[in-house]
Length: 217
Image 1 (cartoon, rainbow, N blue to C red):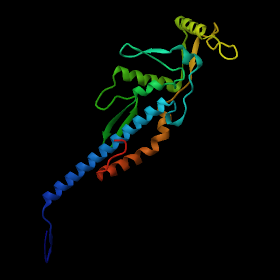
Image 2: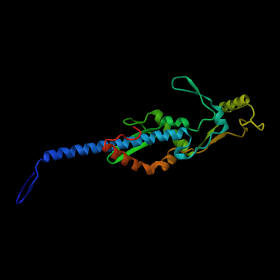
Image 3: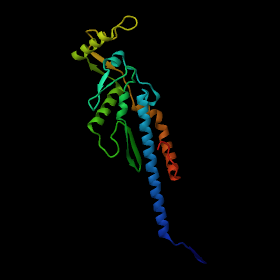
Image 4: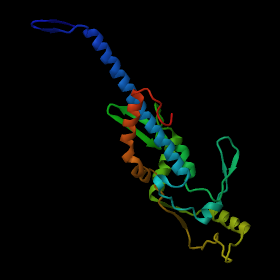
């Protein structure tokens, strides 16, 4: 920079341009990281909420006595079996299907829930989780097949009566369907957390620019 009677000449434009470019790159990188960290936090929190049976702090309708007792053995992908606790939370296994994905950065857009992970398309298994979530969000009815009725009767014969002498496995011949209550997952979770998202991203962005460790990393 030099001065004269007629004005000031500022030189070094290339150095200034290079500095501004680096600053923009660092800012973009900090924002991208801030968004990813918040998306990952929401994913982990949603999984925890589902496993505890209370997405967004709202408890899901409890499983019926028959639902808790009629299927106590499930098959895993490796062919082995795992016994389910009759006291398990409803839809707890749905936590396995939760993912997050950053759709774009400018403007930023991210998805958390039953979605495909970053850089992938939704496969059949993820599609199944999404369909189940949609189905359970509104509730549904299912027909009682002959084999299911026989299985319920068999389980009732094994477990017998409960306190008071009644048998919760007793089905009237006229009972042809089971009704499953609505158990929404995404809507109550988002309602409880949406007001914090933008603030968390801004905080993460400022911390990252300052070179500090982001929470949850």
